[in-house]
Length: 108
Image (tube, rainbow, N blue to C red; front, side, top):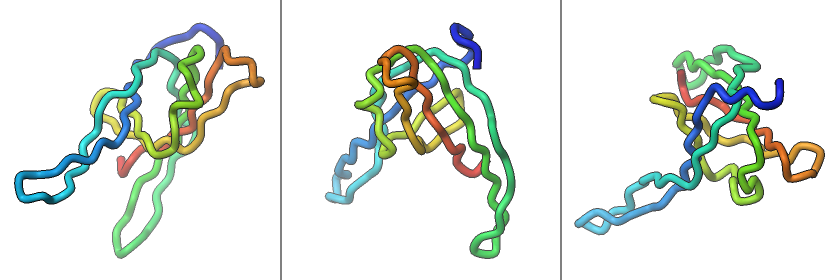
């Protein structure tokens, strides 16, 4: 990926469970950080699980340093209406200048 090409705005979200009025735990997501960078799809395919076909698409998001150690695999990323699971976060060359985030799109 070419440095400096920022064509996508991703929003990283953390899970913040809340309680309903009946005391039931509800999953809700809150914005942790927004970053501009380059989003590229690197692999796509389909699998058959539980008698259903599931589509999978793996992508890579590369951007300038965004405090990467604080982004974890427990978070998710959104790009418009698309939702991605965070698979890995890599501090490129361990120089705290560029970050590569490996993502998997949820049932496309």
